[in-house]
Image (cartoon, rainbow, N blue to C red; front, side, top):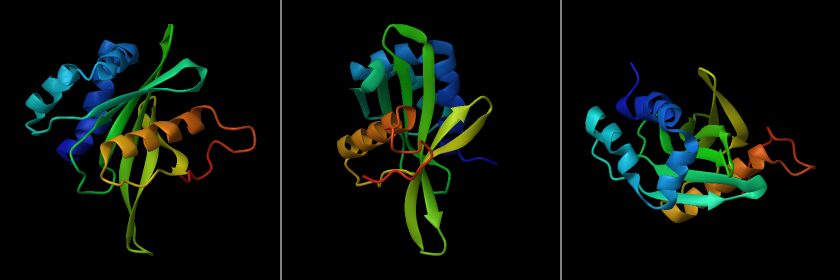
Length: 163
């Protein structure tokens, strides 16, 4: 059975985006208005006051990053991102920055996954490391998403992200 944090990141928040639209959520995140997400915490019984950050990236992409409670298990997300395109409400994407553990090295790392229909697909290899500073981590996550969506001509979009 999935944990509450797993359900929030992989079921509930994507449904909130489906109902409200990524552009609406990104606009709320830009205003630092996290009230759009209050019902998520109330209904799941998870005590959390999310941090939020919005970045404008290339091709008029707007990426709204939302913090989640600290993950305890593999597959739980540190944060999620809603991606919208300025002046095109039809463009919306959803990404998670997930906690992972490598048994061979006994080290933790992150990975980025994107919701693709009913499933999640790993994108961009390893995600950026978590420093514990939301501003730094959210910026690195948004930058990694931008590279995935708009890869430089010399970089394969499924290549490992290195900051």
